[in-house]
Length: 98
Image (tube, rainbow, N blue to C red; front, top):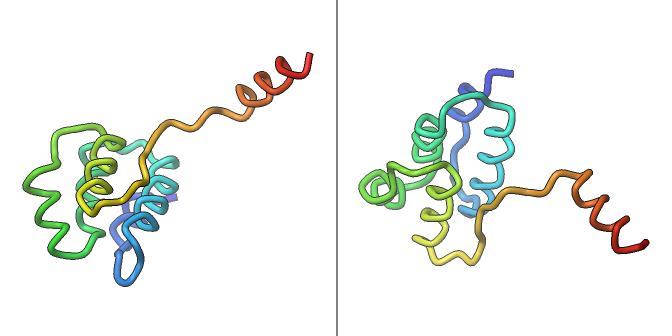
């Protein structure tokens, strides 16, 4: 899968920022690109004036931190975090049962 090409084609248009963040994360999970490039692709995908604001004030962090910054910039209550792996969740559930 050519994740760079898919990320370049991603555009916000009439979608919410939260939707674009979800799609960007989903695609980035299949990528081995460094965060700095993933951040650039994300900036290219969002509408103006947010795009300019993000390029001016948000660069220089991890992808998760940058996406959180973008969400906070538009007043979203969504956040980006690391999801637990399925076996970790099942282990916690099984431990609670026994």
